[in-house]
Length: 295
Image 1 (cartoon, rainbow, N blue to C red):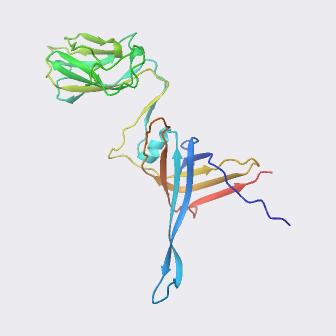
Image 2: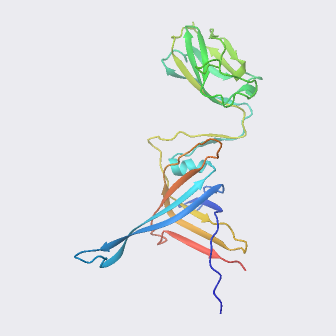
Image 3: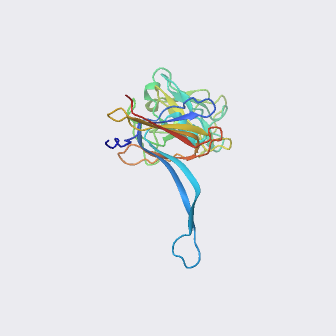
């Protein structure tokens, strides 16, 4: 009788976090650089006297960890690892401009004496909206200049370049008039003046954000005092071998916190997620592993 074929594992196929309450998957991770299921135990030695070797050895605590190196960023990662579910939006053909918000001082955004609102120029503006965060700075009581924090999207619609090292995107000061509109065509933005006599304070600033027309978008603010991390389970599948063999690890109860985003030159972003394992008293275990050679 010959030896059996060795049981071997190869590669990584997917990691699927799931809800511990109803078993439903949060989603699936398939763009993976690797995953490690680790169970490490400390061995505690009994030593004493002149003996150079331990008299006895017993097992200490076992630390369980699941490490996943991911190269994709679905919404559920923020929920599980940073404590906050993103706000997702579907297709937007018109583009979006956020509410103008005073940053320094209080005179820039003012429904009476400053800028009442920022909006997309009707009909023509959407094509020139450029993704980014913008700053409106008061340069006189009735004029402002506009700045952008990045030129990443400046080739969308009408090409744009920074006007100077201050990152200004207006070529001249823009005049704000009572109830009037001031269009900045190159970025698709309209500034509407307040209803009263315009009188802003030089040096005051306000900010807004721009989303061009899109097929989908998301936003999430992390670090809030009410953010919460959720316990979850996870299914890890290795690659299917050429003979059809498959291997699965089902981690019953775990938690993750932290999601580093390392952006490097000319490289896809890769994040290593650290997940700690816990004992599940209902299932009386930490994880279950299954292997099969289909016939």
